[in-house]
Image (cartoon, rainbow, N blue to C red; front, side, top):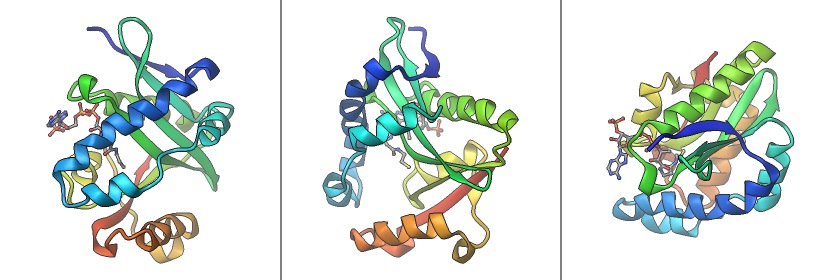
Length: 172
Ligand SMILES: CC(C)(COP(=O)(O)OP(=O)(O)OC[C@H]1O[C@@H](n2cnc3c(N)ncnc32)[C@H](O)[C@@H]1OP(=O)(O)O)[C@@H](O)C(=O)NCCC(=O)NCCS
């Protein structure tokens, strides 16, 4: 099956919540199953906003239908925050997550973006260790990262153990 990666079109946004929910099923076998299940998924309005701002990229199957996405927000100071990366389990394990992030980097880097950032689980194999293989590193000083710190604080308030969360960046 040949997959591609491209910008999302407005008529595709309705398909994305189901992909995110299906991808999150992967957490069912982890210690964070209940937390992830109880955490809100991306609002449609959020997808609309990032689609308008070159922030929503989809992996598509051979029929050009979305099977994964990267939902990214410009958050100022040369930073694009990867708010969500999801690949439908039927299409996982083919490197699509990495291709999505490479495409985001290739688009935004030449336009002056200096780094991609994200927050994730430290101890889930397809989270921090996976992102490390894709060139992400833990941010050196979270206390100075106003936006990222706010994300982590919100996640802790929602019940995520503080020690489980990490903020990472990939320099472009
Ligand atoms: C993280 C995610 C986007 C990776 O997408 P992907 O296209 O499958 O990425 P890859 O093909 O590079 O596979 C990632 C790893 O998961 C493994 N994997 C993929 N599908 C798997 C499956 N069904 N069962 C077990 N392992 C699997 C791959 O072997 C690979 O491991 P490796 O890097 O050691 O080879 C995807 O797993 C996902 O949507 N997860 C749920 C949501 C999530 O965790 N998002 C990130 C939150 S910050």
